[in-house]
Image 1 (cartoon, helix red, strand yellow):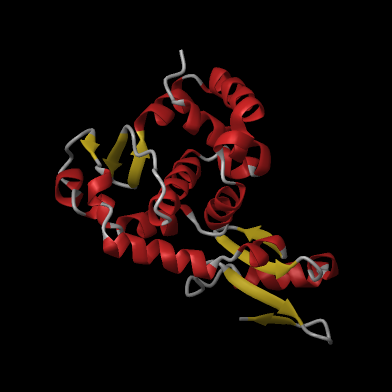
Image 2 (image 1 turned 45 degrees about the horizontal axis):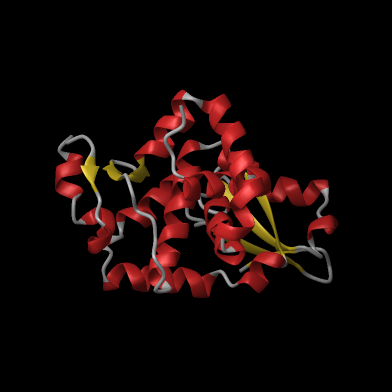
Length: 219
């Protein structure tokens, strides 16, 4: 039996169809759902923070987590059906694309650090880190600081950027190319990117251009 509500089923189905790699990573699915709801809250719309709990790696929608980890085959089927039947009615497409792009271009640790900076989680940090289970996170704890974080993300990832970007994932690094540059990448370019990916001082996402001479330019 699947316990996730229709909104979460539709959103999960959207991610499964449009960004399956992220859907197949439990933490990234959770961060996608959280970001979507945080964008909704920041835009003055009614979010759905139902069954949101605090865990050491950040906020978790517990019903989705349970369905995803314990009933995965059924969950996959149900979210596909929900998205197909109600997705267009329920989901804000641009908001979903923006949330997906963020989880697609940050590592799991970076996503956890991002959500740890939000008062929504941070105000319960002591209880969570002391090992208390099922700590409820409340919409009322989403404060002005959280709105500023979401506003910053909104400005950092305009839809135009998302539409014109192609992501190259190497190890824990995410290199962002213009879609027109992506086909120009050679084996030598990938060797260079692999070497760059060994540098722990690079923070995701990493924007890269190809100059007229074919050299990679790191922004």
